[in-house]
Length: 407
Image 1 (cartoon, helix red, strand yellow):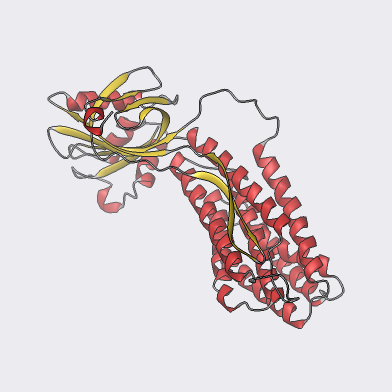
Image 2 (image 1 turned 90 degrees about the vertical axis):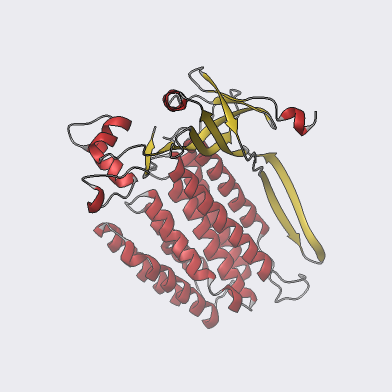
């Protein structure tokens, strides 16, 4: 069937409540991603890519209600969209799609139409066997195992660290510590972190005789922010700050041992970010979860890119550097399992909605409209916090202002 024929088909959405809506639409697009892993081999040009299953496709949407009753239709759709069950979409170009909305923005600035934009994330519907493993426990257990794997790999390649290696470890520990120390909100965490910093430095001085104890203490100080009493966002950002700071030195690494230290320290940082993402999760909505997914994906991709750049052309020279395959595979498994579970969390979290105000309003009216008023004014505070409303808007919010809320 040609696109001219397909474009005549209606764009419909059946929400979880069973209500069906038909829309005018524009700008069809979709983003398809795959699970994959890359392997590099000494003396063999190119990269071996093993591709897994396709991930859920993302569909940015731009749809419209038109006509005299478009405001009423949009309000009925907004109410129906609050049902958390998946939608069934009949798309003129892409056929039948089962998906959840991640965000929806309602724009009524044009009087004769309601414009709705947002993103749909495709979901599977079959009932899979239920795992008896708690995902957060598995990720943290595998994280601890990975520290051991990385530690053994380090000692195998650097059995007797010398002055150069000690200085590199001291620099990395200091950089990591300085990136985090002033961000810690809990006094006990700050004390334990300072003690871990001192223990790591003491262990580095004895690294020649006790290399495994040394790298274990170094990993401990790098790893520690994921356990802090703080929000997921803050803990992950601390680890990303460490990662980015250490990454600034990657272009200066020339020796095999310095590259090995980088492999170890940054690998632990990536794994720690995965552990932080599932430890005491406090995600308020699906957008918060998706933001952490993007962060973890980004630092893992950067890590693999760095190792690829550091790797020697061949492994024939004693000074050649080849990343440890077992460690990288184990880290890849942790990252993929973490991302999979974060997607599950996102699909079951509150979803963002937004409207462009049709008339002047205020925080009390908006809290009543979208959440209902509470005796403790919590919904008013939620409107204020989610929309960064300052003193100049507390008494009145002008028509045309975009207001975010969550369902």
